[in-house]
Length: 583
Image (spheres, rainbow, N blue to C red):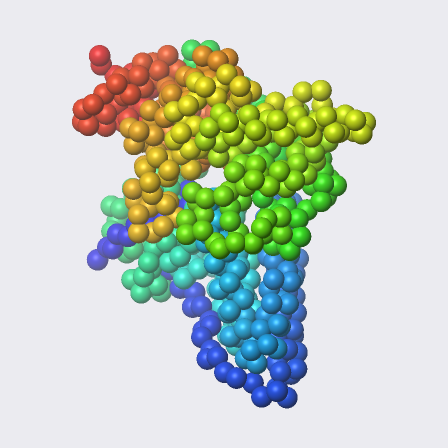
């Protein structure tokens, strides 16, 4: 009898294969007190386990085949850096000494403290970095407990497998990708986790967040995984198998045709040129983006320079990091200034105080930078110096009023004057823009547009603040709806305000790279899309197949409609067709 389950689809594609369940090693161990004479031997046991776990990761990194995109190795490098971070090693050793407890218990206390820091962050992407902490700590714990996770090892010529597990680490995925694994299904994880990003980079269909998957699915049974909607079908009948095999063939043909779009301009059927940009984190991302036709970078995050350290990065350290990435981008690069909240990573630059109950709505992003102008000044000086290497734009996150924008702009001009006096090279002009991710900024867009040089709509935050839901909270994330009329009105209002003021308006949130919304956004008048490099060709295909004039008319009817049935019809017309509907 077939069983239909739904999780969170994080990597597109259809896989049909047999189930192989992965049994996680047991990570439970009691906390116990050590005798004074046992403390030093326990410290040695922890250090030996840590060294072995680090060697395991290095071995896995060494198994990455030549020619693999650089961002894949970067995920392992991130875990190696995190594993050697003093916040893990020294904190755990200090707990063993001060509390006289066993290494497993001390390491879990370290993990809990670090995870709590990430959970306080507002940025959904940064918040999910707690998964990396969990993965790194779990690897050391498994060595301490001699409880290794058993990954499948496929024989040569064996049939592909679909791995079902509680969780999969980036290192596991690299190993599994060499074991003829067709897809994976996990009980935990989210779309922004490094595991999900890596699955997309490797082109492995994946569904996460499917609770009880290991209990409901059986080893050896046939499974269909559709990674786009997050569907999992166990023990399918012949009719269902035929349907999904036909879909697989269609998708293979679709991917072959996508590659043919490289080198072609993103111009609609009615002659409208659309600018496609990329969101990147590494120089390798810039190369992939350029290969797929991205004309520049619409979002480069800078938070990683500030994380997992006890001291703030110096101006020279930041300059070198920014200069490297700017030099690797052929085209404009929009760099977002620090967007962290009330967390330890920036505590060294702030006064001590109690952690706010809701840091998402507290002192973060531009608010933090304006309250700590020296923190902002150092970053801005480094950004302005890096502008000598390319076409840098500075984007201010979480702007909610014209006063904030003007205050930040004043600090930037002061930094520019300082650098000029020092004779530092920099671009003659560095555009400064506002990230529109707070409803107040979207509503006040006409006012901001008279002063900002560009807008970029951050849909991830704009949607959750507009609808008052936390999208990484499992209890309420079903309410996260990019098609909510209030969200569409704010996006439309921002685009129109930018157009009237003659400034470019981009979108750098996930919505920009989701092909389900491409026609709708074209109809709302968006002309600059910034997304993950892997999404550029798919969005380009839809643009080249669209009549934006027709989409525009349908989108305006959608914005004006108050009839739920009509709105659904119009959204379906935008999603599946050319947007043309009967008047």
